Length: 85
Image (cartoon, rainbow, N blue to C red; front, side, top):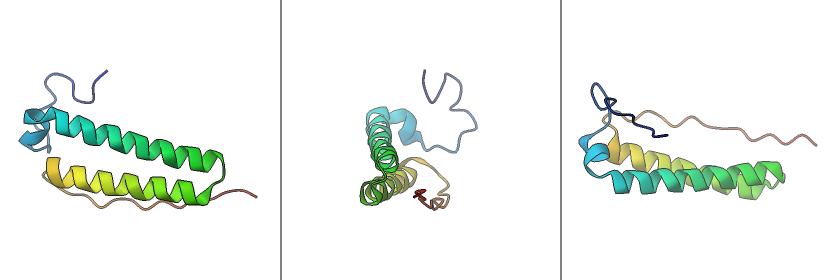
């Protein structure tokens, strides 16, 4: 499976760097995945600090990738972490 199947480049808002520098894009994508895994682990263990740091790291990675690889930067949606007591 790939995020960008053959032919998806046409009409995309992605900058040429996504297609010309796939290693950098894939590295950032992998980092964001690790950050979201940290958020998930924190939410599963009810560790607010771990979940919060995972979310913050994911947002930083997401914004950085959008600045580098997307022609239009959309605002990052805020999340509320709720733990049922």
